[in-house]
Image (tube, rainbow, N blue to C red; front, side):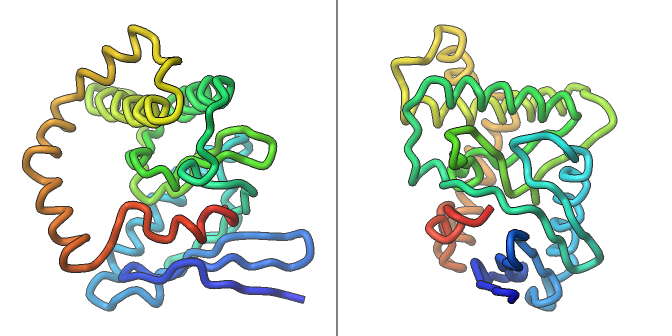
Length: 217
């Protein structure tokens, strides 16, 4: 028996969790995106597919199963999003930092770790990263890559500051205090417009769908 449950539907398509016996997967479908945005939904789907393909076989990331022009299927990771699990175990953040280093060694930056729903606490207490639509997979780690990797780390440390501030080292506090220049430009110029469009005009929020996304990843 196949069970399908809608998790999220927005301008860029829909996400469903599909269960068939022990096989549980997430399906992102861009074919039902708003017509004027379907091209962008496909581009985001392709970015996620490239990143997940490069991470094949690595724990802590969703396994890519099937991808075509409008549809991406990836493996379920059982767990809860960070804002629901509220991790306070030092081992979690140590493992999350190691997972981030593994991601960067694969020449991938996530670019969306500021959102707590994109960091899971799995059923066995381990970290996992999901939602790679904004990820960038490149062949080298040049200056831009290093700047974006720095921001990945800074966002992870922001979460650590939220849940375990007493664990931050002097070096980590220095990283938090020194955002990269792309981050400063984003905060001063682009982010206010982004918030106006997404929150005021479209009614989105950074944690939209977090309740649903807490279980099936």
